[in-house]
Image (cartoon, rainbow, N blue to C red; front, side, top):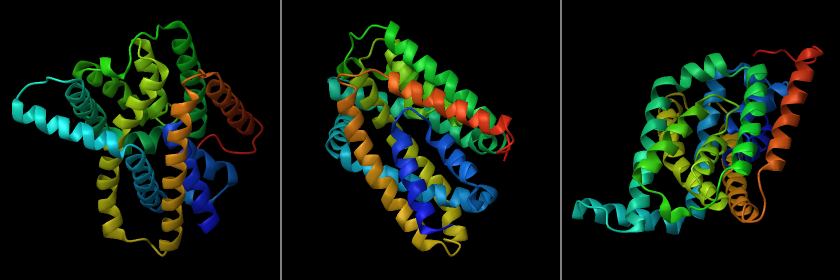
Length: 279
């Protein structure tokens, strides 16, 4: 793996972790598309994945630093008072409870899903299907709820939806935003809560996979890991900033078109024999 490849993958992770287009799917598809050897090295792939996720986590934490501190303080206050009294406390508990389904599903099934269901042809299908679902749900559902309407049971519902994103091609942000729009939460609020809900999951995945990194080391790719980390942190921050502004006035049509186009290209490459349907 070269430094350029590491930077490309870092940018890919940073953009696709928060844009509703599937980061796990793209981190498989980009090396597959260009024939990079990392896709044939599961140990290096999973280890490098730690650096990319920690970079993305840093970008998100920097962007949401004020929100995270406010909700953390609200959660502590709620625990001490043994009651939920304010909007911030409701949101804090929604984030805590919403993290549980994804954390449990990830611990139990992530490795098995990535090893058996992370095939290019299936990722293409998931990109197309969930891209259409996102757009249709957004267009037909109401938008009469803001972020302040989110409560713990809403967080649990959205957290359960987030767990579906273990399947590459679904998209963590995409499926969470779809679920939020289905119950009337407006686009910007749906995206903001989705991004906040992703932070503890990304952090947990980084810690969980980081155990392997501590055991195996950087395998001689320390410089590549560093630049992948930097690229994912910067691109993640920029994409969050952009999307929260973009969704104030625009819908998800462009993301549906991108997902359908990407799926069509993948399936065409497979059908013509340019690339294999499996890895």
